[in-house]
Amino acid sequence: MSSPDKNATYGTEDLLISLCNSVTRVLGVATHSQIHYSGMVQRISKTCLRPDIGCFVLFDGGFSGLVIINFSAQSAMELYERYLLNMGMSRDDLATSYTSDEVANVMGELMNQVAGDFTSKIRRELQTHITQNQPKMLVLNKQVQLSVDANLDKPEARRVTFYTSNNNIFYLELAIDRTEFIKLYDFEAQEAPDPDALMAESQAAPSVPAPPPPGGQDDTEALLRSLGM
Image 1 (cartoon, rainbow, N blue to C red):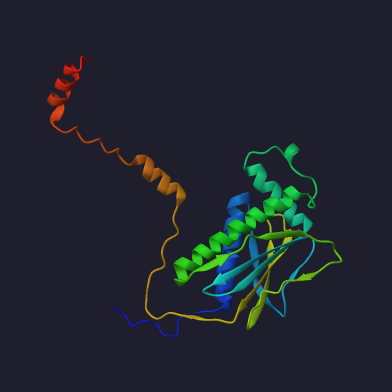
Image 2 (image 1 turned 90 degrees about the vertical axis):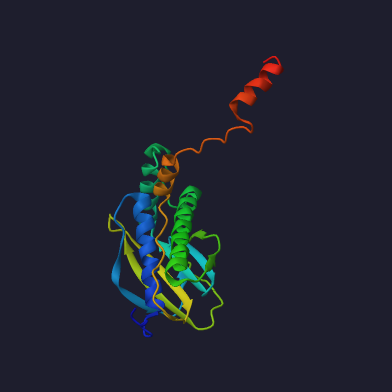
């Protein structure tokens, strides 16, 4: 067995890549479309909720952090419409404005799925545990920018640009305490559970027959006859 690589570390950019992959995977599956992000990342001094729809989630536990996604009206409506149309809803039943409460609710649900995918991945790959709060969605006026205080001791902040399949843009901002995970020994990350496979396995499992009643079948029939049945 090879000795562990003491230099194997997992830092801010690695956490950011993991988060970006959760965004593209969850939104891609939910909307049946291609979501991709820029290969360049920005160092920023602070995170802000920006127009047109801003959403933020706080993490705590093994490390603390804040995730913000700022959607343009066009990107929010594209993701909202694709998500509900793929769920079988009629286009006539969809909201027509990004300021609708229904749009904010759907984007909040998608953000919750992204955060859940990320926290699950952190448990499997880094063998630590983080919790999240319920995502908060705000429809913002173009003149308003709100800063979110995450109470971080030594914050590092990054911004990544995302593109929808229609080339509409939204931005992800991550602020976390400066930290590094150092691998102490080699281990294999747990595989993500596949709900469809678990369901199929459950349905394919043979049913276990009930144990025979005590005394055997003859004793049971004799008892039933004595009762006139």
